[in-house]
Length: 117
Image (cartoon, rainbow, N blue to C red; front, side, top):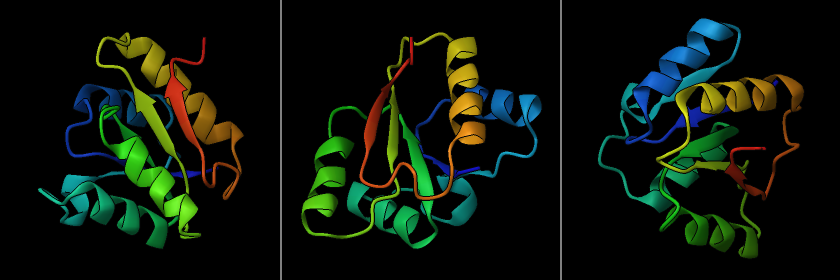
């Protein structure tokens, strides 16, 4: 099972829903680890140091920074990008599925746009 990090502006209703649906999922928020206000490269660095796949709504800037890490041969455990209009239930379902069916390191260097369907 992969470990997750929710970006600072990630919908907290999704985070709560994931935690309620599957309490075994290791999901922390930027706010929980003292990274409030951190820039994207710092968030990705922390995620890499702690082997956590990033959950974000930031489809505008995070992708470029994530692939920049990959090009530089730096660790990038993965990014799951969710559109702001994605239904809450679909987001929760997708996160639970991806977290419970993925192995550590399986998402290395990947940026995935969701929903899965």
